[in-house]
Image 1 (tube, rainbow over the protein chains, first blue to last red):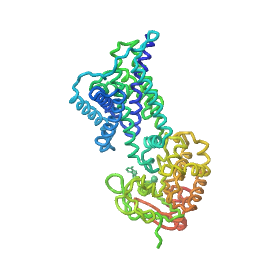
Image 2 (cartoon, rainbow over the protein chains, first blue to last red; image 1 turned 120 degrees about the vertical axis):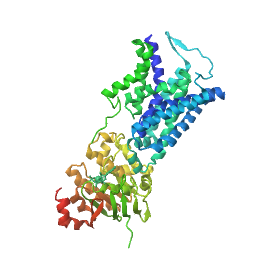
Image 3 (cartoon, helix red, strand yellow; image 1 turned 60 degrees about the vertical axis):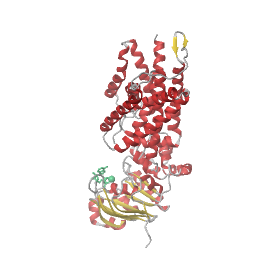
Image 4 (cartoon, rainbow over the protein chains, first blue to last red; image 1 turned 90 degrees about the vertical axis):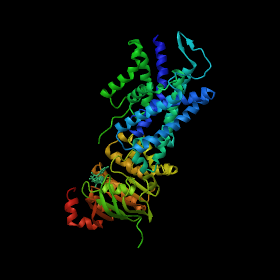
Length: 287
Length: 238
Ligand SMILES: Nc1ncnc2c1ncn2[C@@H]1O[C@H](COP(=O)(O)OP(=O)(O)OP(=O)(O)O)[C@@H](O)[C@H]1O
Ligand SMILES: [Mg+2]
């Protein structure tokens, strides 16, 4: 029984990890929690839906299309909304991002209503072994998340642009002084994060359902994972996602499953009290 | 009259409403060192930030080799041969020492290997602590990372905001030696220093800034001899 919960937890973690990494990267350059991330995920799910069900494309093309399309939408949200507002307080920006999330959600409702949808996929039997079950899509999600985690690691650690992303997140003024075109680096960061949110939309459509609030439901677990790992630390976000993913599923052992949604909140609240810089984040050292 | 390598004329700049620096002239020619001294809050850092392009001058002109750089973003000014070491937040704390130096050679990545050896010859500690995050270093070591980063390019103009801050007295001596050494290769150095006496000793020219203006501009030796300057700025430190 709990073996199945661990499998569910790992699937759940794989769903949360890419957007938690993206949220962390964005936080590094924006310095405010962007609540529109859930809406970005929803955009990804619906672009994939439009391409897969609407235009009849195979799932993998629809998935790539969703990543590209969401990357553009997310980048535009910076150009049109957040960039003109740079320099405002984090609280102002947070409220603006909530407003943006509501606007995006309602634009989607305008076109698709509130119906619950799903991708057009051949029906497959779940794989069963030793009384445990997992679907082919869930295996895909886990594998792709691992690949993405490694790819992001390689990008940040070994490529020129990746190092510039870290440098810009660390100290934007100094990066500029060293000759780095930080506006370009920031735009690139938005694109990469947008693609990750788009991919999460696809995953959500595969594992959950497609509806205008699908991303919103993921927002709190994503925040919890990013905060748990130490906000602004992409590796922490991966670890945080694993812990939140497992915690959400394993609470079913002790609490009715309707409490699952509260797990993220509890993790956030407890962490902010006892270890505000998260598990892997570094506390700010004051000079 | 030959143009100086760096010439700033009548620079006015501030942060919000109102100016902090009111019409300051500063210039340095190739192979020379000029030092700005003055009390806290005089606008020394503000002036040097403006030359580096971190702040944009509101009035006046800033030229390198006769070419106007005032109004350009910092990343472009870096490409015009200006290397600036800020007073604060002058390293990438989350990056390792080596990664910091890689950022130093961002505009000339192919030169990294050769320059890395040169900079580590000046500051051997940077090689010893290559894999340590800059944020975990002592203040003095961070200062060396910051300076080393600026030397990863071969700048025409080096702008140093309190390069000796946080260093032990022995290291201060060494830092000024290194500045002199670097300067001898033909680089123009403009620095702000609290160790006014030692800084002026290696300088050709000195400026005293107070309340956003140049109160005195004279050859460094004259400032060292001036009783007014030594009473106000040198006596207190030595
Ligand atoms: N980021 C900023 N925003 C607003 N005002 C600032 C900022 N930085 C400095 N100031 C103000 O500008 C004035 C000049 O500051 P500046 O840092 O240039 O002085 P300084 O001569 O370098 O002093 P110190 O010797 O302490 O480094 C001060 O009154 C300071 O309060
Ligand atoms: Mg200063």
